[in-house]
Length: 69
Image (tube, rainbow, N blue to C red; front, side):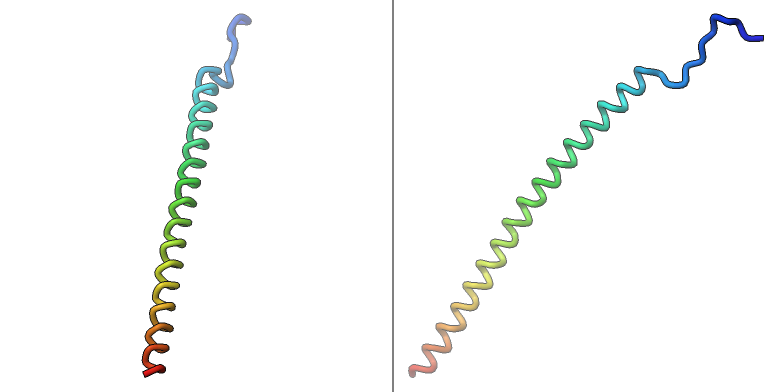
């Protein structure tokens, strides 16, 4: 038989608070990681674009020099 003074706890409030805090920390970390990845991707894209444009201009100048001779 159960005593009337015994309460059954479905959730421990301390665990719920700890889980919520850890979830919030993970979310902010994930956002920061994603933002840093986007910045790095933009830098890489810019470098590739500059290299391509430099190569393209070099090829055009080379053809112009050979065409004029």
